[in-house]
Image 1 (cartoon, rainbow over the protein chains, first blue to last red):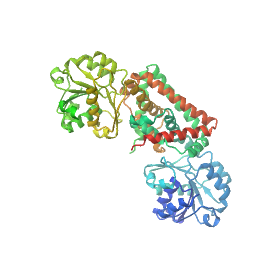
Image 2: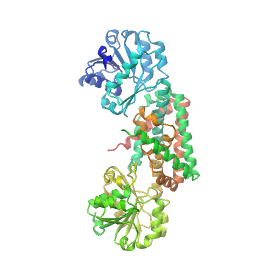
Image 3: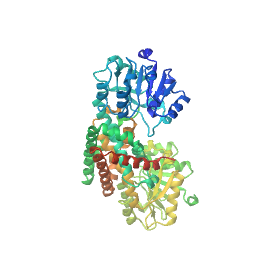
Image 4: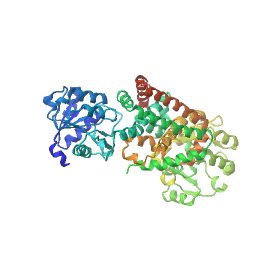
Length: 286
Length: 286
């Protein structure tokens, strides 16, 4: 945490569920946290709870230039737009990080246009809930979640270490470092594909009355079917080629199971179930 | 509960996770519960905990004929075999029920061969966990679960009411009545399809290391990928035509989403997400 001695002021850009949770945790640790939000009510909500020390709805050099660390918790396109329009407001030497759920489609764009005296170390906190907005912020979400840093060749070891440390002090359970490409493949499979499956399941049937009959299986598989359609459509399209590959992989394995069932091939069915049982054991929370 | 005044002795046939949970709950309510199990250790486990008053590993008329209600918690084929071989041991006028997860493939077979002085009212407690065996029994599972009775034209209103009441006193949250065909369609979609999806997801990749990066989505969607391959293969095959229909419905909707993504059709993606968000709200536990 020594790296943080020199960094005491953090700006959260975008005070939604994740940005608000960052603010909450960092303020509780003694950092001076500021925020930019679109609506004054959002700032008021966080001010009342002591999650931020101050905030603005407009972007000015006077306000932004006081911060050493900037955390962008915006939709991907809004993050890119912000940097394009406002990066001149940022203090020289500041470190930028983010919480964006896709990397290949935005990291090179931002690295390319970023001033040489600023540094951007991308990160992705793998925490969320089926709600959006600062009123759902809750930094306890991080205690059981993973945090992934995806550095590029433009990053210095010091800045990467700073952003790793940020993950540690936010309380994440596991900190990993991946390339942006590895991140997007992994997220395409673990997160985006699973959201596609959940949404698909809920669109199959007029299923309101089915809630009376369901066991926990269906409920578990569709928890994430309650989804912010604007954010997730943007995330899917920003990782389109990788997500299509993961969807095709899933369809091919699912069809294999379907064929085994259709032909009464019990050995293939049991083999798939044995493999899934074995592999799932690695995902039990310790 | 008045119907139970005349029925004080219950036999659990098959003392696994579900059978054991029935025994635990019924004994705690003052019923005299007996059990048939394959292994003496299973009986000993339940005897030590007071979940059963007595039990046998062999089937004799002397033992079985004392019971007024018999609950079969066996694999589907084992239930059919048991009735074929041992129904002569059952007292005249006894009511038989079960916990089997498929209905069309076994209910008519059993109704057809059953002695006319016995009555079988099928039921399906929609409770489970990713474990098997009496040591995992826990009747608290029922408090949040649904219980489905699937009567046939051979049943008397009194016996249907008795088996409904059994669901009530076991503590199930919601008791429903469906035809065997409705049950199998519903279970094919809500339970069997979701297990196929979970197993498929876990077989897609060498994914052990992915646990370090995952969020809760993947963990939720694969909880049920830890699966008893013998039981579920039998259940899938016993409901094969219905499950194949549900798998095809899923593939068709999933492919629709894939095409929308591939062609950049954001409106279709958002429409599916809005629908899934709306429908999922009905599944929130009250």
